[in-house]
Amino acid sequence: MSTIQQIIFLILVMLPAHYLYAQDPAFSAYGHHPTGSTRVLAMGGAFVGLADDASAIITNPAGIALSRWGYDLQSTTNRVVNREGDIDYDGTNDGFPYRFNYTTGALRFKYIGIGVGYSIPYHIKEDFGGSLNSVQELKIESYDVALSIRLGKSFSIGSTLHFENVSMSFNDYFNNQSANDKNEIVYPTLGVIFRPNNKIGFGITYSSERRYDVDENLNSNLLSVYNWFQDLVIPAKLNLGLSLQFKKRLRLVGDLDFFYPTGNTYLLGSSSFDTANKIQERQFTLMHGGFEFTVISKKDLEFIWRGGGYQEPARLINAEDRFHFTMGVEIRLGIVKVSAAYDQAKDFTNYSQSIGLSIADLY
Image 1 (cartoon, rainbow, N blue to C red):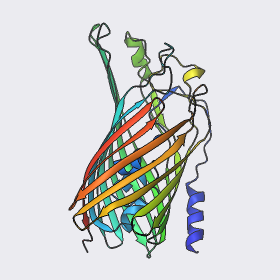
Image 2: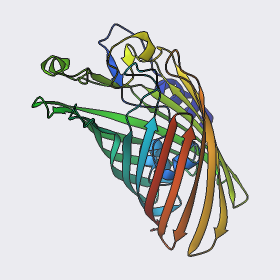
Image 3: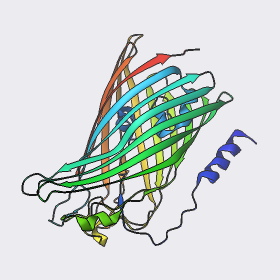
């Protein structure tokens, strides 16, 4: 079987047979904006065909075995404000500010790459204060283990196992009430990369739907306007990515993301389950694009400029599509890398900072 035939076969295997069926209402614990490293965000979220740093553990684990470094370590923090819908029906769009953080490390030795990571892909802590004097919190923690194997000179496969812990809590200090619930789930991210030379790369990743079972009966014991305790869902996703290198300084990247439908899903924190805040039960397709331009390249100093964008389809019936503009820079001093990026759109901001270490070939 040729390499192209192998790629086509893997695409067909990873495509999900997704059937919608009657389910309890659930909150959406995800967004269409890119997650991962500051570098990924800066290039518009297009990284599946490149995946050449430790954040590949999250985006495409197959990239670890094809990397040019021996060891890479990075830590990223992001703060998102996404006013997507009117969850309290006061006539203005709302959205709980939340954070997501990633710390990943990867090691490549010859044709094998391994990686570990700890991430908080979703964290909301809303303090209402004032007369309400209550705090509600949602936290998803993930412990990640990745393995990647290079097959020949240009093809690699990889998988990351994510061990996720989900916790939800509500504390009403005025009425002296509190409740919390926890859940655990394990799921894989599967990936392949085909890189026939150092100028072009093609990647594919797939992750399955995750649905976290939460005890809704806890809502009846609280004096709250929100049904805070509700099942959580993150859809299955298929990603196709392309990376093109021009000379030594310019790289272009592009991704195509497919978010598969979820049933009976609403914006997080919706006070009632009606069509206004219901996620449309259809497939969402996103196209990401970006560039990476090396302005300064010396042995102990590098300065890199990155930019990109993507069109975000509206998840709600009454919402509008949004175009996102992304930009970022990175400075490398020796083996230390520091970077920053932002993602801007209507009623949306995401600021990201990262620090990391990268050590060239160890073998």
